[in-house]
Amino acid sequence: MAVDDDWVWYGGRVCLDFVNTLRDRWKEPRETLHEPDDVPRWLHDAGLLTDSACTVGTRTEEARTKEARAEGTRTKGTRTKGTRTKETRTYGTPEFVLRAAVSLREAIDRSVLTVANGEPPRPVDIAVINAASATVSHPAPQLALIDGRLSPIRAVHTPTDPTAGLALLAQDAIELLLSAEIRRVRVCGSDRCALRFVDRSPARNRRWCSMTRCGNRTKVRLHQARSRAVGPSSGQPNAGEK
Ligand SMILES: [Zn+2]
Image 1 (cartoon, rainbow, N blue to C red):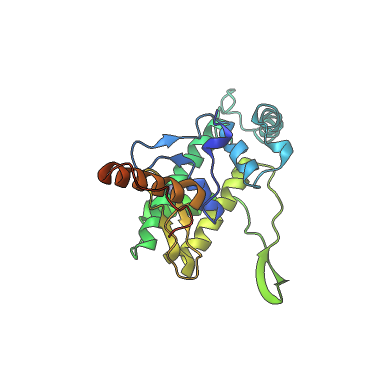
Image 2: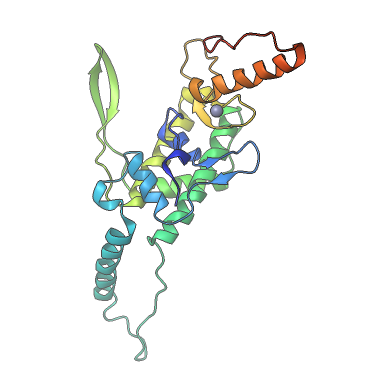
């Protein structure tokens, strides 16, 4: 099971926060979605799953029981030569959702970095994102006045199913891929990070996923390296320097 510190929220868009669940992409990537219940837990933390749907072991089992009953009803009359048609139904199980989530995450990551670099994404990745997106309707666009300015918002009802939560992630990725903001996607400048984020700084020069996390750490490392090179008389690094 992933621990809270494994998940960070510096992406600026939920689809990038999701991409960042594979940590340490700069070296040997470290998976944080290990177990089936890690996906609904992450979706819940991201606001994409209701409280009651977060506990896979209880809710999904219940849903699967209902689903099995419904399936039994639907399959009445499908007996062939006295043998009821068997169906290996794994779609929607926690294990299936985990595999689908990881597949979607990597398709989003490859596509975002490729398009941000001005190149078209792979058709297979487009297909993965589209398939995930198609499982629920796109939330209706709404208008809002924010600080006196007309702004778009989406009326989102928090999903009660992890698959629907993944669909909203895929839809967020599609919006990002089709928007001008895609050219602002960055990979953290720390040589020990590689988290993805959207640079919304006015000068478009944000380097770090987080100043407190990677910005200051990098400056401390550089300062220590300089101190070792010139001797012990150097002062402390200025955390506010750019
Ligand atoms: Zn970073």
